[in-house]
Image 1 (cartoon, rainbow, N blue to C red):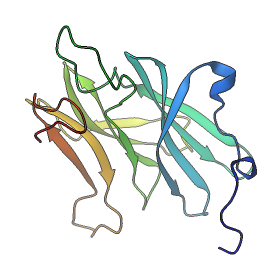
Image 2 (tube, rainbow, N blue to C red; image 1 turned 120 degrees about the vertical axis):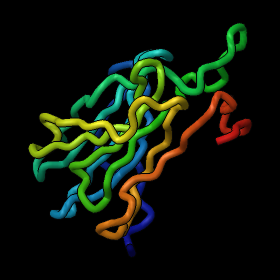
Image 3 (cartoon, helix red, strand yellow; image 1 turned 60 degrees about the vertical axis):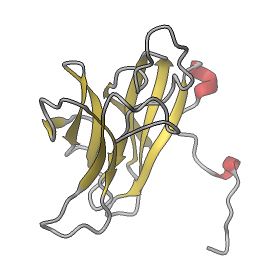
Image 4 (cartoon, rainbow, N blue to C red; image 1 turned 90 degrees about the vertical axis):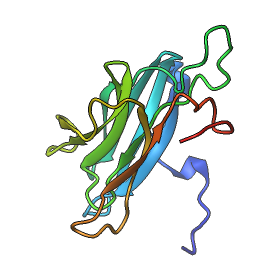
Amino acid sequence: MEGLPIQPEQADLVYDASKTGVRAWVWDIAFDKEDRPVIAYTRLPGEKDHRYQYARWDGKQWLDTELCASGGWFPQTPAGKKESEPHYSSGLALDHSDPSIVYLTRPVNDVRELEKWTTADLGRTWTSEAVTSGSSHGNVRPIGVRGHAPDGPKVLWMNISDHYRHYTQYRC
C-alpha cells in the first residue's frame, strides 16, 4: 500500500487500442488463487459489434481470448433517434471466488440472456450454459456476488423492460 498510487506507465499493457484502432472498456478485475490478475473487458470494433474478452496472467505472459460477440449497444434506441451511448454494452462479470467463471449477457433470439461461461485452461477454451432463457425482457449488467454463501446467489443482474432508454432514464 505504501507504493500507491501507481502511475499508468507502471502497469502492464494488456490491450493497446492505439495499435488496433478498436476501443475497449474494462468491466471487471479479479485475482485467482495464485493472486494473479484476471480481466474481463469489451472490445468495440463497431457500434453494433461489441466483443467480450478475457485476459489472464499465467505467471509469464498475458493470455487474451475473445469469449464471444455480444451484439451492439443496449438499450435499443427508438427508430429515428440518435443513440447517445453506442459503446454501452450489456455486460460481463467475473466470479471473484473463482475467476475461471464469467457471467455475461448477450442477444439470444433478440432478447439479452444471461450465461455462465467456464474455462479449465486459463481461458483458451470455454463451456457455456444458460442462466436465463426465453426471457420476455432483457437481462443486463451481471455482477458476481462477492463472499456469497455456498447456497446463496452467485450472480445478480438487472431485468429491463422496454422502458430502459439510458442510464438516466429507466424502469427496471
